[in-house]
Image (tube, rainbow, N blue to C red; front, side, top):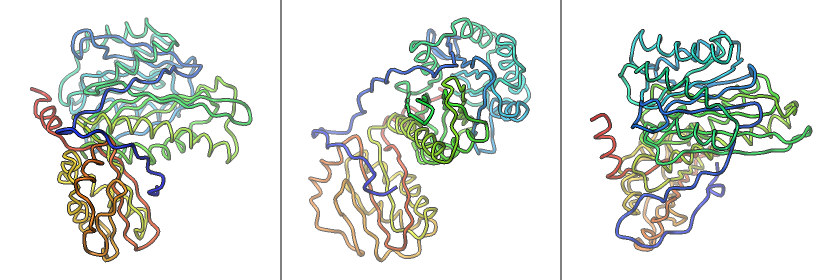
Amino acid sequence: MTAAKARKNKPASPNTRPTQPALPVPPVAAWPAGFASGAAAAGLKAPGRLDVAVLVADQAVPAAAMFTTNLVQAAPVLVSKEHLKKGRGLVRAVVVNAGNANACTGQQGLRDAREMCQQVARFVRCPIEQVLVASTGVIGRKMAMPKVRKGIAAALKSLGTTQDHFAAFSQAICTTDRWRKVASSTLTLAGGPVQITGTTKGAGMISPNMATTLAFLATDAKLGAAALKQSLQQAIAASYNRAMVDGHQSTNDFAVLLASGSSGVKVSGTAAHDEFESALSTVCLDLASQIVRDGEGATKRMEIVVTGAKSDQIADGIARTIAMSALVRTAIFGNDPNWGRIVSAVGYAPGVKDIRKLRCKIQDVLVYRDGTPTDFNAADLSNAMKSEQVLIEVELGEGHGEGFLQASDLTYEYVRINAEYTT
């Protein structure tokens, strides 16, 4: 990702302190043909809030999934991995709950996750291994299964294919999210148009290593499980794995891509696969960007672009080191053009050997080069940093490696939300 590719917004009007961005209006979307969804309020979250959802394909369809790389893995992650392997990449349904992560819950947690799958499997009349399960919420609490059972039954009874059904599903998976997150794309291949639609959740515990979230993606294109897996891995690498809110990796990461084939359009040949993968990556990048913007208490979305490193791996490491710095993130929150925090972070990033040619820009303003600050107007730059999007560019002059990462700022509100999360 080069600096030229990073998007920029106009600076916001001056104010006394940063404020959270206005809530966006989610785009109108629906699942591609071949899928139905339902949602219900089971009482796992606040009364009346949707918290259980199901996504059901008309028949067993090819699927691919990615999961957290945290060694502490929630019961639904373990069960879904097991089912995906036993089902040989064919999936009929996915069941989701929010409000309880079902993580660190031992054998009972595994039994509960399997029971959730079994309830759905009986309803849609498919083998249990063709049902995947995902959960999100507080870690270490046993599932309230009487509520979950009623919620799943209600969600299954409400199955439908309208935009309202899709909206309900995308709302039900949220926890601390301030808004539901959706994205969709239509591309035209040789055989005709195909649709890719996705929804995701996440605002905290977001780390760029299969970023902590749940993501559900579906397409009406015809692809096999192996091709879906390759496309999903590339799309996640270019999007969710370049997104950070707080650097804390979860126990419940789960991203799934299902292909109904209902369009009748087969994705075959290198060119078609490249086009499909590009469209999927665009959808995933849109979703990941929404997560960063909605970071718990966030007021800004940073785009960190690194060029001139010895390798892409080193460039990515630099971007992550900058994004992980609490000092950098608080400076962005306060509209403080404190370039010293950025430059010093580069100096301890893994793989960096020579900083003599280091250059740094904030919002297109060169603030540091060749070992010394430039003569920039700090007041003007501070005003430019009041935008909801702040661009940080670092050039090392060592090679051709490039890196990119987006991250949210660190605010008073983030501390409050996470200090009171379970109490």
